[in-house]
Image (cartoon, rainbow, N blue to C red; front, side):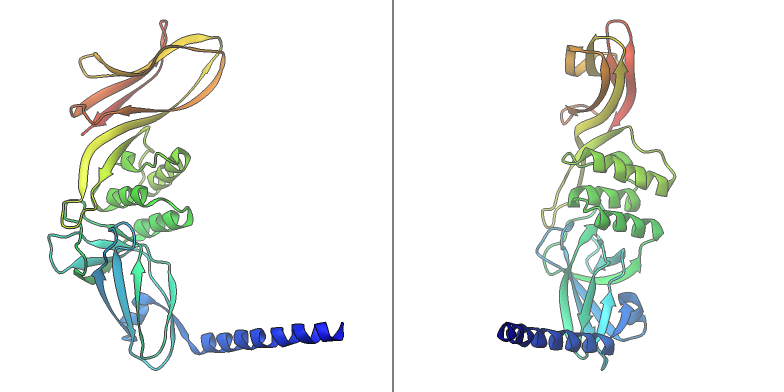
Length: 296
């Protein structure tokens, strides 16, 4: 028994010693936000685009600690970086990362980033960038939601374009997680003082280096419908153009028993002309649900 205790003690002592050393090192390090460290001339930052997608770790940040003390840096959210070549998009980093840069040393780290100008081109690799400004409180809160809720990159990118390029909130949608999509757009609606969308649009992102980023063509139209039936009904769910012509049906004369219903319905709209459409849920007797949608 005594030998076993001695062996355990022999293992624990080095681990405890490492923990004490790590704690001592951290105590010697000052803790600053990245922007504060730059302002106080404690670090120099440079940036360039990486070889990954602009809405992934698209920006490589180089941080040089010019002082004699180790620094624990908290990377500020919503830092906006501009390219030297104006035909390429701005990049906005998510932030909230914490990293240590030792005295007299440099660190290069790939930062989660998003496009800040949907009308410009996706960056090519090694394009020089410089820090331009920090986004406002709405952008910071949006990025925190994205990080805390593990929002996927495509939906997060469309959310940033709502803030930077005045895109519609209905673009913020992830087909893999309709519930999170509704939660996210409700959150952003409150931040922006607008109503949450009644329907969503699915649009393609172009991440090809050197090409224009945003294709605003709507690939799919998605809506959530909730209704109740006090008796069995035969229902149809269809989309109509402005001339009153039926363009497509999600279902026709489908039998539904009495009960409560919650349905996500989608329509393939890639070949639809731009304009206004009406989605209707109806029986032979009445229209249960109806909404107007705009396709641009």
